[in-house]
Length: 505
Image (tube, rainbow, N blue to C red):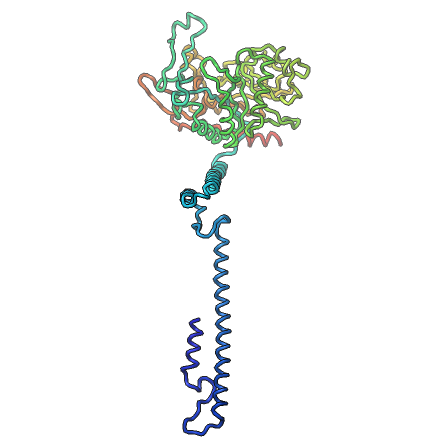
């Protein structure tokens, strides 16, 4: 528009020669009549003004189109629900968005219901998105930083610990001193129970202190430690609902939380069924059914692929030898009166072998495999490393799984002060590595680890720290770091993988 005004001014102020026609000479006679000249002037002036108006309209139209284009472009950048006047980019700041919505509701009472609905939806969506993104990012970070889980490495895990903060009292940390069965020997040893937090029922002291198994941060830390060690399966100590060991409290209500924690770290959970009161074929059927019905749908629930391609849950059965083989056969053989075979609750049932004769009883009972549990080389036939080759051969001949149990050492004198002769020194990790070496020699399909956190018997691989309180000096992992046994587990998990590849070649 400014350019148009300048051109118009030049037409009427510049010399006539610049406007394309000759100016009349005042002293010369007129070649044409004055009226004719006047008519020509106004015709020319009309043409000039018409061209100017057309040019002005075109420029104005283009300017309007330009402004409209800018407005449409800005509108496409706004949130779909935004109306004129909404602060642009508000959706990127959920807290500010909530405050603005509240302010609008105060100014527009008639839209309270609609405004509240929008605000509630937006806040929920913001929370969901904000929670989802860090979770996904953290999961990717975990997968990048931690070793991959080895699902052929199973570790025995105990969720029976408690403290006043989460449980109203100490549980298991205050374990009693168990008397010897011979009164004459028992009289030579102290009685009573431990008094946490400084005096606990263990010869080692956990880095996490006298924790509660209900503490979410403890569960998280445990899962991370196990994943760091490349363990793949947690063999969870389990009692039926409402039942517990004589020094503990029921723990079945913790199973869903442990499953969720395991799933976050891509771990699996199987069940280590303890010798609860009146355990027989009928109660076992009902309890296996309960476990599968309640927990079998969880993504962290462990299933093992058999040689026939079936995916079956696995159950370790502690102290299985206490129940007579005929009763087990009712449950575990196809012809049994209470048979669980070829039902939706079928599984792989692994029996504990202590004495050599148990292998024949286990086979007759209908079990699917054998494990040795005890981390005391020489304590029993099953826990003695030099017997593993014979046991593996027996299992191969009878279509049974052989699962040797390795451990870092053994010391239970904090709860059985008379049992010093069964102590197995850790020898700075050498005892643990010797057990692994013996296990790999028999080429097992699965290796079990005793234990992650059985602190009473000193078989834990969980982190422990040096501690001295009054007259008590706890054992520790020095000169190594608190995570040395996690690192050794990782080392042997990787070694197992490499050797297994060679076994299959």
